[in-house]
Length: 284
Image (tube, rainbow, N blue to C red; front, side):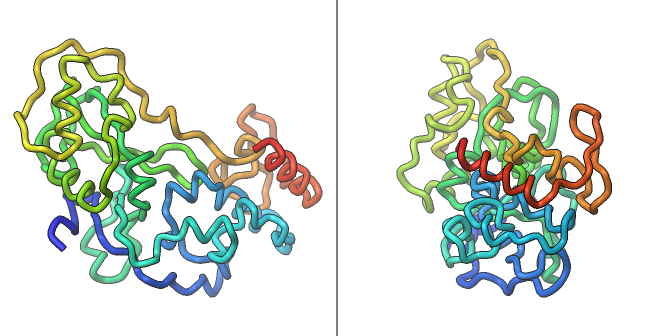
């Protein structure tokens, strides 16, 4: 269908596979589905991987009572099934700005660093508007984004909830991508996109038209830029215990890890993990 495909080197709209890939057959994630099976917004919001790395810390721990959160990607539980991004529907595919893997590897079947995201999740969480804090190249059009120019950020969270490096687009240069997106995901109110309410009033009509993908002038009316919008505000760590037991705080290989306050901690025992999980779920 027209409009689908790659937009620059870091964005795509395409159909997901109809079937989930085979679970990993070996390694610490044996029996779990590969990460590209799931929407990466859902992975973070549902805490799918919040406890996954504990398998390395304490091999043999019984995770059967943890399918409510952090099962690690079994693909069958009530948390996993709505998160699957392999049902033959159109999804957005995002390659975070930090990722330098070569797109030519796509054709060779290698991991390319593209994260699938449900279109509803993508519209609701991944888009943000702000003013460029420095010069950069638009990662769709290749045109320079000037400092202070309005831009569109595309953000996906890391699996533990915090924002990954954004894909930066010149807002005017993103119109074709946005038209294609809304042709697949109809009815979304673009005024709900993050950062829109921080745009200068004189420029808001131009911004909303650009976000709808409508053709228009290359630049908005001049206006003083308001205070900078922090796109990271909606992305918070989802690891119980503040991340001390999470891969994001260090390599979970069984050796002592450093807590964020500088104190060291041995791997958490099974009863302690169960207590932490019960407290976490009880407070949700």
